[in-house]
Image (tube, rainbow, N blue to C red):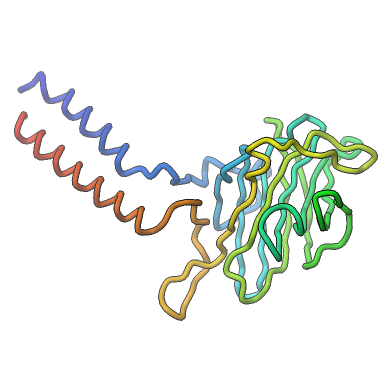
Amino acid sequence: MGSLFCPSLIVFFSLWLTLISPSHSIDCSSLKLPGGIRHYSNCTELPTLNSTLHFTYNATNSSLYIAFSAAPSNADGWIAWAVNPTATGMAGSQALLAFKNKGSMVVKTYNISSYRSIVEGKLSFDVWDLEAEATNDGKMVIYGSLKVGGSVEKLNQVWQVGPGVSDGHPMKHEFGKANLGSWGDLKLVEKVSSGSSSPAPSPVPHNDSGDGSRAREIYAGFWILALVSWLVSVL
């Protein structure tokens, strides 16, 4: 009996931890921002370009506060995070773009009317408190606040990284799979019942539904009970 006890428990707890830990779960403490002075209600690892987004949505004044972090494709490159008010993808995006200008980080706004037209200018919605910083691990962070529509529950977000800046203009980004897939929904409000809603506690990962999560929980519970029964029989 003694020889089975430790190995059995090791197997049990290893499988238990694997089953109860969803692959998409995110520990916000592991995505700490370099400044350490800003606090956000939500954080998520975006599915491409090794990038993250922290955000807080204030439904009372329809304001969104964000911190977008990513590594540019080159040391002197740029990063960008955008909202597309009219469609998905890059064309039509209202972008916040950060890069180094004479050694200092700057944030500029771009109205991307088409893939051929990237024009610096005022966005279609108000933005304020724009800042950027470079981190010791080669990443850049964009901080900003923006006004969203009062009835908006989700946004079409786009993010991107680029290789450099020429004469103050961002150079074209690569067109690899990760670059072309850098867009998706950002859920601001999570519906809790018919006719009511609440601020989203965290963005919902792509291609995952509540029904699927519940099914995984039931499946995990079944195997945990089976393992317990097996341990009782062998110990």
